[in-house]
Amino acid sequence: MKWGLLALASALLIYPFILTGPFYWDVGVTFLLAAISASAWNIVGGYAGQVSVGHSMFFGIGAYVPLLFYQLWGWPPVAGVPAGIVVSLLLAVAIGLPTFRLQGHYFSMATIAIAELIRIFVGTWDLVGAAIGLQGPAVGRAWWDLTFRSELPYYYIFLAVLGVVLYTTYELARSRFGYYLRAIKAGERAARSLGVPVRQTKLKALMLSATFTSVAGSLYAIKTGFIDPESGFGILVSVQMVIIAALGGAGTLLGPLVGALILVPLQTATNTFFGGGGSGLTYILYGGMIVLLARFEPGGMHELWDRIAPRLPRRSHAA
Amino acid sequence: MLLLQVIVGGLLLGAIYALFSSGLTLIWGMMNVINFAHGEFVMLGMYVALLVVVWIGGGPETFGFAAAFALFALGVCVYLSLIRHVMRGPMLAQILSTFGLALLLRYTAFWIFSANFVSLPQTSFSGTLNVAGILLPVPQLVAGVVAAALTIALHLLLTRTTLGSQLLAVAEDRSASMLMGIRPDRMQAIAWGLAGASAGIAGALMAMSYPWSPSVGETFGLTAFVVVTLGGFGSVPGAMYAGLIIGLVQALSAYWLGPIYKDIIVYALFAALLWLRPQGLMGKA
Image (tube, helix red, strand yellow):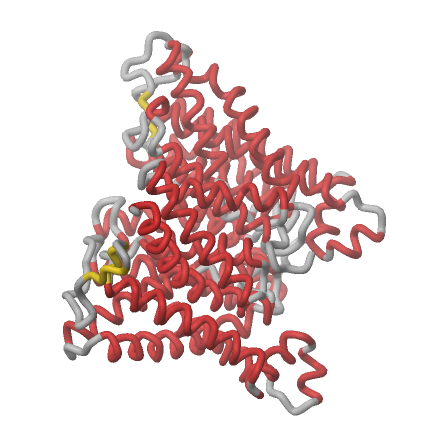
């Protein structure tokens, strides 16, 4: 496990030097962003088992607030990142407090409806650019605008953030809090009877998840220099987080990473093949994959591997 | 007078909301599964109506039945091939299965029918009725009345017939109902069929008076969530009242605030409801 992690980390570190050129770097950056968002979702959706299908609301807020800071006061977008986190946290509390009193699907339904509410609302709000969206600085005024010509600086910034998210998740999963989360996922009533503060724990998990998702949105907006309601709050933003985490294995540390490793190259391939990101075929493929995954392999690649590994010849999979 | 017309129009549309939402609430109440693809079922009902009109040239009676049968069949297929296998599994699998189905249906529809808005050619129900100064378009009037009648019929089916008792028995206690000689699998398949049919007919009814595109499924799906939450999960009469209320709220907010606000107000109502009364109007806590 330790050696595997080390190998993975070094592979990610030297990737831009093995596959050079803007195309591969762009794929690398997309992969890292997808992995960050899915790992953030994983904390509440995977570990705590509270399936959010509206995480785009945090992503969108994280993306909008920095560019809004630039648009309104000419501040560097990075300065808006903490503000984006604060707004995301407030929203997380506003959703978590009422829905976590109840079990089951309330949370899923509330997240999808509120994400949609925000998307429509932002699309009609002139201050945030309505349907057109917001733009960042076209040409960087100084380094703190973080507008680089090359993809390379973004790659390493994103990699560092991914490292922070994964390390936090790792420490979290080992802590008492992590056991609480798994207990809640396994059975809320039983967890409560054993003294787990269920509502509090779920709320904290959502707040942590919202923080990281908001940061992911900020990274996206700062790198792209542009955000509109669909790319910030659209349902497909949420879908991507869910499918990547579920594909790799929801509630496992490296599941989202594995999911992104499969999905992002696949997505790049279908987009190149069918032309244009607007091609509906990609989403048909997503839908089909999600259905098949839910029907046949709800544990994702992680459980599949756990089943296959012992049957492989030679040394068995070290747990 | 215009206000009165807005109110009647809202109630007529609300009756259709009630019809398709009662299908969603039936499934929720019976097996604690939420169908994220329900709005897509409504959207498919609209396209079935269009295909029947274009290919066979039938009137509203024909395409109404066609949409009901097609979506009944789809509902049963979805249950047998997908839901049956995931409903006792982890929650992630339950949510993903219907959520993925929604994406699959929505984007397949985009692929086949394109994103353009379409509408039905004028049917035998056309023109406008003038009742004491209130102008009522006949297609909307017929659609609203039929939808209300069918929602009541579904309620009666559940409460007054043997089939209804069997469905409710499975909802109440699966193993006890098996001891009484009821096959839960068959009953749940029928429930999915009924839910599909309610969505299909509702779609066909709306197709008579509104243009649509494959993206309407998302809006209808969310509307159904709001109606079901307001009415209380599992309650068909609750869905009936809540559907009428939501239709009315939408019509009034479009009238007073402007059309773009009608969905915002409804979703905001949903958020407020989660805070204040999550079990809904008729639901048990």
